[in-house]
Length: 239
Image (cartoon, rainbow, N blue to C red; front, side):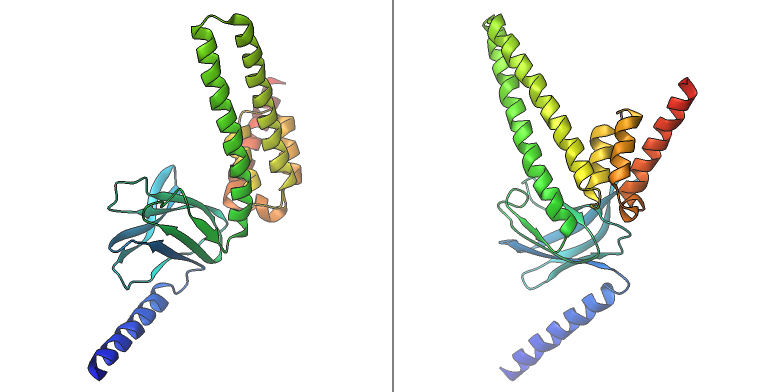
């Protein structure tokens, strides 16, 4: 019995020492708990030069603590990928410096999970909740328009088409207001990149004016500024 206890103690100390060495010089640790996940690979991923790459990984057995780490420069989207499962197995989260905790289960890996320790992710989750509602309403209206078109109900179809246009305008304004009102959040330039890259110089300037210097100096802030400056060059060229 004493030998068994000593073996477990040595194993625990070895694991602690291993992860302490592994995480040296890394300013972000992602602690993961996956209920009912017994064995397999877990990967920490990010997009680099338009390619999804692995930045850390761990092979998990029953007693292995899942800790993934990375030396992050500024908050950005990361992905937690679970290997060896037939389910959709990638969790998207907004990562930042510090300790981030992700809790989920094998059965509902990316449909029912929580992320704690990232203020940027909290702002991102609030944004996604509203966007999902817009997307669901849009799908419902598009489905209804197909049915009306099939039954040749032209008057009703016109009303639905107007509702779709109004919904699109509300979503556009929501995105714009969210980006401007959260100019001190690293979510702002990401929304601007995804939703307003083709917008006018006036819109891009409005969004930029709301951003803090820290946000502008971030990865997404620099990407947004590059888009805005390119737009400025085109405006000057045609004027």
